Structures are given as structure tokens and as C-alpha cells.
Image 1 (tube, rainbow, N blue to C red):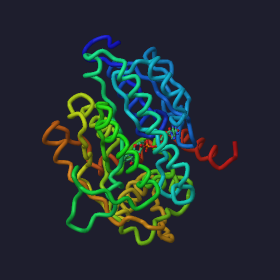
Image 2: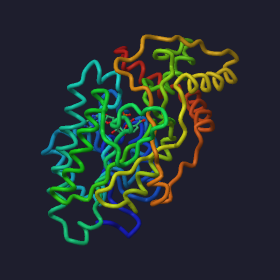
Image 3: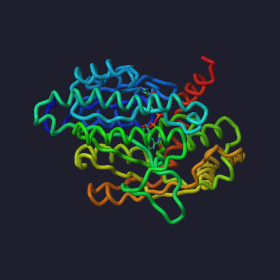
Image 4: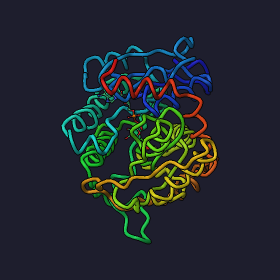
Length: 345
Ligand SMILES: NC(=O)c1ccc[n+]([C@@H]2O[C@H](COP(=O)([O-])OP(=O)(O)OC[C@H]3O[C@@H](n4cnc5c(N)ncnc54)[C@H](O)[C@@H]3O)[C@@H](O)[C@H]2O)c1
């Protein structure tokens, strides 16, 4: 049961990953009770929650979202007001080499969670039912590559171009189907590229920083001409909470920074920030392009801005600077992750 109108019991899946760990910390800081459910794959790190694991309102359950029996039990035991679903396999390159795990975690895992959430939700009183929310966190990649001049919105057709985005697209469809068929109060969110602290060092910004700090060249796919929109992870988390509070049940919300960059320009900008700190400019190495690399993602986020009054508080120029500083100051965090993933520990 909720303690008051403002504090809630909130289940977060994938809470030891990049965005999930920021969301868990934000929710605890705002006075909510949080159950973090995460199987701790290579991308999950409890060290991202250091300082919060002993918080009296924090609970952690290490379980795979595909394990429907355990998930159903966890939901009925914790009695959440809201569920934020973030657990997923997320790296496009890994999805090209090993797509099956993406469809298992992202599609079967989402359906398992939806089934557990629905049986719990159906058991609630009408008042509790009305306040319940299932917020699904998805990506702009489900729309595929955008032609120059085109921006995707909530009504755009899906055309996923990678095994990762195809698995996320399937999970989005499942969430909408559960809203339509069973009446579960869902919302789907499609967000652009996030950056910030605690991001696993295989994604673009940490790849640039951690390679530079180890004296390695910075690998850039093709000529680095692909275009992406960038959003600080704090702004994404703020949007997710706002959608749970004020979003319309059954709706989709595009979340984006309106901050589009070619990859090479992002890399050059981050290299410039690194040069100021290190005294020398990191070397860039163009490498063979990713298979089926989508050229451009572009989103129109007017709906969440106009209807819910959301807008990002940080520009990427400032945010990249702050992110570089964080990776400089938190070498232990990313070095121990790289060590663990290289099989050295
Ligand atoms: N990072 C981005 O730029 C971005 C942008 C838009 C949407 N998203 C979406 O946001 C969510 C979180 O992304 P992220 O970047 O934080 O990912 P991440 O890879 O950093 O973290 C994913 C977390 O999910 C957990 N997980 C994976 N499979 C699981 C399973 N079967 N059962 C339980 N836990 C499992 C991992 O252990 C990890 O802690 C994902 O759904 C992703 O598709 C990410």
C-alpha cells in the first residue's frame, strides 16, 4: 500500500543497468519504495547503486524476467503501484552476433512480466487498479532509419533494422496488446540515445572516453556520418516519471533531446574535451561499418513537451563535458567492469 498520495511502491526491472540504476536512485531520492528486479547480465552492475543498497526503502531481487513464476510471485508480494520495465539486452552489435538472447530477454521477458503484472492488477480493488501503471521503456530504433527531413512521431510506422530494434519493436507491440486486450494500464516510451554516468563502456560516449584514457585509438564505424539524437539520462528518467504520473493510459510517448549530431561530430567534440584534460588529442581510427547500420534516427517529441510540459534540462555540449569528468573521476567503476568482461577476474 502507498504511504501517501505522493510516495509509491515502484518495481523497476533492469535497475542495475545504465538507465535503470539512475531511475532507481531518483525514485529513492524522491521518497518512493523500490524493488529492483535484475538478473545481472554482463551489463548489470550493483556497483552503480553504491550508497543506495542499504537504503531502507530499497529491495533487490536477482531474477530473470523470463522466469514467469518468480516474476509473478515478486509482483504479488511487493504489491507495486507502478512498474517501469527497462530490463533488456541493449547493444546492437551483440544482437548481430547473438540475436536469440535478444528475443528471449526482450520479447519473452516482456510477455512474462506483462502476464505477472496483469494477474496482479486484476486482483486489485477498483481504486488501486485505476492508479496502477506499467511503463515500457523502448527506443527510437524501432522506426528504422529516417530520410533526411523526416522526423518520427508517435504515429510513425515501425521498420526496425537490427535484431535489437526488431526485438524491442515486438516488445512494444506486446505491451500495447496487453493494454488493449486485458485493459492493463500501460504506456510505451520511445527514447533517443542516452548518455551520462554509469553507462557500460561498450556504448559510443564511454567507448570514446575509456579508450582515450587507456591510450587506445577511438574506433568509429564507417566514416561516422550516421546521425543520432542525444539525451541526458537524467532527462529521460524525469520523462518516465512524468508519464507514470500524468501520461494517458494506452498512449505512446516519444522522448528526445532535439539534439542531433553526426557520430563523427560527437566523437570530435568529446575528443576536444579530452584534449583539454589530457594535453593531447586522442587518435581516431575509422573501422569497417556495422552490418545494416541505420543511417539516421530523428524524433519529434512535441507530444510530451506540449501535453506533459516536459523538456530536457541539459544540452549535450554541457552533458558530454560532465560525463567526461565522471569517467575521469570514476576509473575504478569502468576499469573493474572492463576487467570482469575480459575474463581476467
Ligand atoms: N541506452 C539508451 O540509449 C536507450 C535509449 C532508449 C531506450 N533504451 C531502453 O532502456 C532500457 C535500459 O537501457 P540501458 O541502456 O540502461 O541498458 P543496459 O544494458 O545498461 O541495462 C540493461 C539491464 O537489464 C538487465 N537484464 C537484461 N536481460 C535481463 C533479463 N532477462 N532479466 C532481468 N534483467 C535483465 C541487465 O542485467 C542490465 O542491468 C532498455 O529497455 C533499452 O532498450 C535505452
